[in-house]
Image 1 (cartoon, one colour):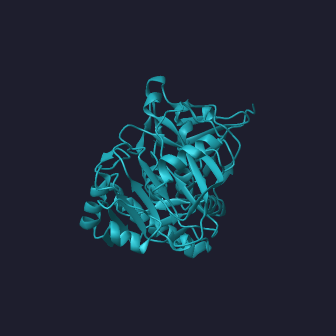
Image 2 (cartoon, one colour):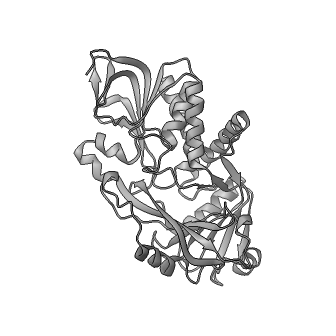
Image 3 (tube, helix red, strand yellow):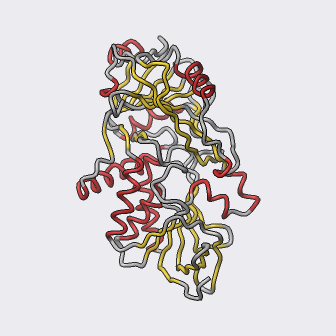
Length: 375
């Protein structure tokens, strides 16, 4: 280990959705900034890959998240105007409710009803459709006759890899330093600074943002680790059955059809004209990202078709073009965790977006940067 220790004003550990957004915002200040990641982002080993992420303004997870979603949309439009990158596509978005079972999703019961209530209170443009109206407009969806759909006009999807890459490129252009393929081995106090150690380098920083996603568990005291569950998710791309539905013109969509959080399916318009990306959610704790099963079996695909797709979604073939694994970092209440790391007041931890964080990440990065610079 070299005796030389590089010194920075602020160090960001983990450059996924939130880390890259924060690094970009920090890079606008006249500070010495370093971003470090155990892999080379954007990559396929965390929570921010797979072509697309839904974004919506009326977020049933909590009304306090609405402002974050709105500000994130503004930031992405600003970045698009600056760079020409097409990060956000507005398609409108549908939330379908069975009318039989209330949604239980992301820590909130009555998720669909909360979404509608927040939209009304916050002036978010929307429309309510009954099952007949929905099927007439979007014939692929076989919603129960008792069902109702919320249609939000400003919803759409984000391209997560492009968003992260653009944040990192802008940060680098603004003078921030980046270091990839460098797992952090320890974070500790050193006099008035924080000492961060990798296999090849020791780094001093006045402040540290720890935004390591599921690997946040490696930095937590033993007693706190069980609070953060690592939940394997599988994304599927199904082949389109040509016919009544033009999937390229469909909105993003979510469908809660039962009493459990897993009684849920969501998807996107076709981005290639041949396939549609669809997924469900699972909340089984794998323990740690390094322990995830990254392979998807034919049996798993068949179970997904039978339990989630068959009888609900038309105009798709029972043909899986590909399936990809990612994961959520989840807490019991599905709230974001933003707090100092135990015993290290100059290290700010942000994690556990619980499967609903990407849409908020641009604004969250702005808020975190303001906090780190302003303290």
